[in-house]
Length: 212
Image (cartoon, rainbow, N blue to C red; front, top):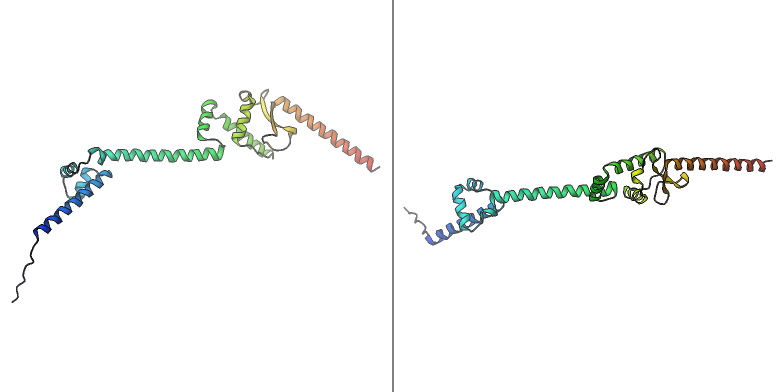
């Protein structure tokens, strides 16, 4: 009967395999610790005690503040910062697209004048649409126009100031609008209406003469 001869063992090879395994485990522990895992979490997954994990990290020269719960707090802060940056980016895009000014300019206007400029702009643009008048002014142009006029504080109804169009015709756009009192605007409207009636009457008279 043939007996099986046991293979010769290489104690030195077993020793190096054990060293390599421990080295790989230590590298894994360090990597996971620096990624934010705690000593307890690493120990449970590798069947090690929390104290043993701490000793391995100490032998590797890893700073306790360079990982675990400490770095997790920093990662949480970084995540919050990233969320704030995304929120600010969306706010900036909305301000540029809807109002034509930066988000910082919107905040500055609100701090100085409240929401009145934005509401007044939307209301006038909406009224122009209802009246069938073309609107060609962005909020930025509209606001700068009122700021240059120097009478923004007196804008409103009654004896206050308003934005009127030259000849009461054409769109609301830069170059075709001016600031005047509401009373002046009404006077200009009636003056233009009378002129239009006189012109129309004059044309009718000319047509009657031609057909005589």
